Amino acid sequence: MSEEVSRERANQELTELAKVELEKARIQAEVNQGWQKVITEVTDKFEKYSTQKGSRETRLTTTLTVSILVFLFIIIGALGILTYLGKVTGESLLFFLGTLTGSLIMLVSERVRSQDDK
View (cartoon, rainbow, N blue to C red):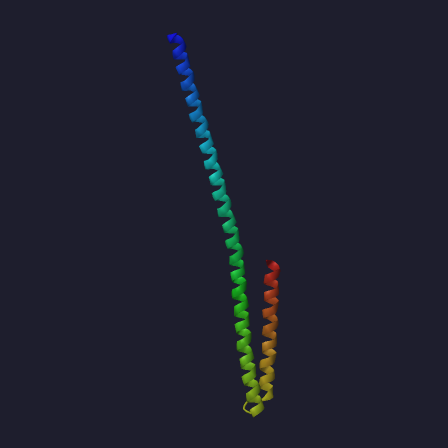
């Protein structure tokens, strides 16, 4: 009978040990799933940041372009008024408009080229 009791105890200990090992495996699987979630979230946030960074650069370029155009239209308006009043010759206004037209064509072509590269 004592032999039977010791076998039963040994079986219970093995069963308890198996339960502990099973619990360890379950916890390890949860930890691995947690790491997969962390890596997935970090990767998604990095991709989102990269996308936003590109859009920030686009917004900066657009803001800069609009600012330059407003500044140039102010200058054109001032030169037009000065030409009308006779303070500046028409040839000066035409020279400035030609230079401005060339600059705007280059600005637009660079902008189109940079958007094609993206």
